[in-house]
Length: 335
Ligand code: DOR
Ligand code: ZN
Image (cartoon, rainbow, N blue to C red; front, side, top):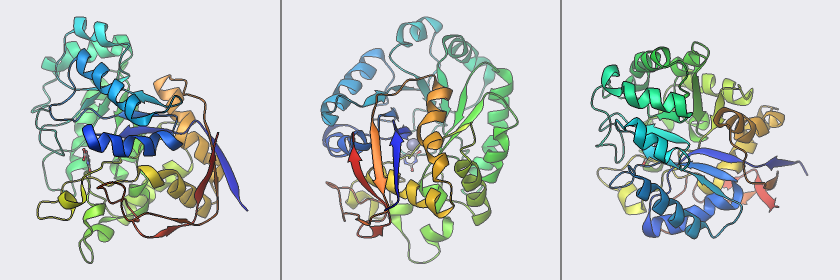
């Protein structure tokens, strides 16, 4: 049977929520990943040292694991240099949301006025804190990411020592930006490697595939696949696994988010195997992230094999992507 062993897989973009939802989803990631970059879009958002340390403790408690590191983030606001110096050892990135573009982003940045952001972004550059960005405008939904490229250019050129991660990219435009600026990097989700807008809304509406940024065109997915499969040194895996309760997804006013945490590695094996690129998966799910973020992940070996895995209909209150379907790969062992 075909098998692959991944060492220290990392999910560099993850939503864990809090409370009961955290208890349900955190163990599903800590089982098969060595660490994850935890998004700060709680209600209210994570903006203080106490909130970061309290949230980290609750995550560690919920995982019950001693071989999993939650890499913490702050919700972007204009922070003072003194505050950033004080918090720099507790976080590895600050996540910037334009105001109102996605779930719990209301407190995000309303206008990209470089001068008002300068103190924060310069301090982040000096202290080696990564800027992680949800790159969408509030324009027409299919164009939002492409329209945001000028903001990335402005940030990357004004702050050349700041590492900027274009999160969950979905377009060829974003892929093309990667090689234009040394300090731009990207995460890619597993669902955006698999689906296009047609899968979400081309037939019956599929709420569990609805997320922000929305899946785009076949041409965009091809561009994402190319850089993921070659494990382009500036791209990393970030699932953007974002749990919402079933009743909130299967409702009028469905929240954005695809829940992939428990099936992400199995799906990645299937995709990389189908393209004869399994050898590049290690770099995509771990090595690139460790190098880009300068982190040394907790030791863990995850062995997967080409054996069918039946995806449960539900985890707690959350319906996963591929619910009730059979995947080609499964996790055999975690050492
Ligand atoms: O689909 C999404 N869900 N995109 C985001 O940016 C946020 C996330 C969430 O928190 O549910
Ligand atoms: Zn996200």
